[in-house]
Image 1 (cartoon, one colour):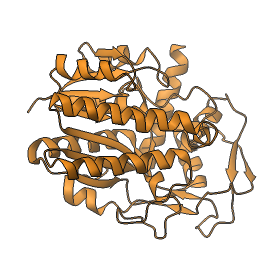
Image 2 (cartoon, rainbow, N blue to C red; image 1 turned 45 degrees about the vertical axis):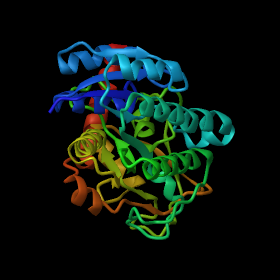
Image 3 (spheres, rainbow, N blue to C red; image 1 turned 90 degrees about the vertical axis):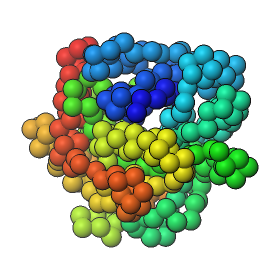
Length: 337
């Protein structure tokens, strides 16, 4: 059944892939994005993929008036909320910006939704809320620990949504804590496109594969893992986008809230990712071993059972598909430059 959906941050990495998945599922989608961390060419590429014009509102979630007008004028029935700052290191240097955008922006959005009578929202959270988890695979019941301002904004946002639901049971919220998004759309028209030196492993490996960086730094090779390097749960961004569609559909169909991890339930080490990317690009990928970074944990893997039970969500793509799609994307990006 088609619904009118507002997709905040819809021109970003995960947001753009979710746009395609929502359109494929039959929904009418309006993107709201200020393009602070997205390329202005993304909507044109989304139009190429979907074969239809893309409706984009250039705006900020801190603009309460714009949010209110958009929800009413566009007759929005539900929101998928991505618009947020998301770099852990940057949040340490700019904490006020992170609370302003991530918490303040969500507050504005929820007020506008309440006024408009639109009470269905899928919230993009993060496994960062677990900090250094006590157990792995990490279940949704694990303790929440903020290790940085970014993680704290996600915890505060989840808490705000929880109190809102308690105050008014008409609200239905899908909270999605996802682990490490990777890969790109099969069209190679959209993918992760960091403006600076990336913080995440796969786009860093991609830049080395493209010759834009000399080598990969591997932080720590003495962890209690099969090859000594850190293990993370990588999820293909198209699987992740599908998870958001399933979450939204559940809210629309049942009116019941849910909170789930989105991950594969399986981890891959840094060296395994490098090896998989090497298979994808057929190039040497030099790396240097470096000391562990403070705060890094040996293994960070999702318990994925609840998403399967509540949403029927299971991942379909493996690490080789993530690397192959990433390589196709960055190769196409360079060819288009």
